[in-house]
Image 1 (cartoon, rainbow, N blue to C red):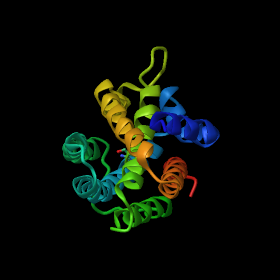
Image 2 (cartoon, rainbow, N blue to C red):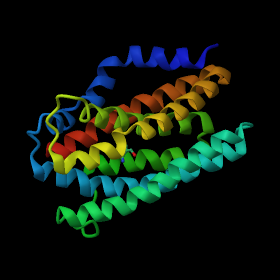
Image 3 (tube, rainbow, N blue to C red):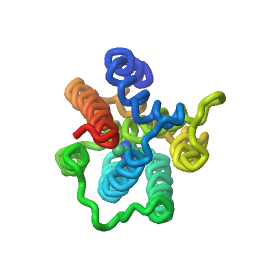
Image 4 (cartoon, protein in one colour):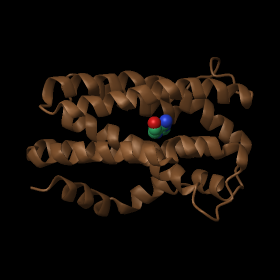
Length: 221
Ligand code: HMH
């Protein structure tokens, strides 16, 4: 069985939902410069809360890799992800003060809460490494693909939002997502039908949560 082929099958099968997550009106409005800054600020504050929750999730994936993977390189890729999250937290604080967004007083909105609850379920020890790393890859890949759209030639991304788009849209982050995708492909090659089904389900859940998160950022509760 070919793991990369399975991912391609998923991408084809869920193409519409995938496009909705990648080319959401929120991203398209950054790309064409029509973004409402209050939406951007809402996104910034909510994403900070999300990333705080994402850290223990990534740590749980690391522990699963250590338990279940024979490949030591997996650990290094995930550790690289944790290192960039460390950087990300500092960036959010800096960006928060730049936009006058108080990162401490805010509470998570419904879509964010739902997404964080999904992450918490994935942290459980009954969820195996293959399913967890699949979700992890999908979460990173959606941001990478979305924000890289805003960096293409001919787009009108506002200068003051370039740093945000660079953060997730840059090539290095793209390489890291490719490394995650390779790990997922290798795991899927060896997975049982049951695990394959659960991994695909996790992939679809991530896409739905990402769409919900963008909707929330646009102000559609
Ligand atoms: C909602 N999805 C969301 N926030 C993020 N920061 C990422 C993905 C990527 O890390």
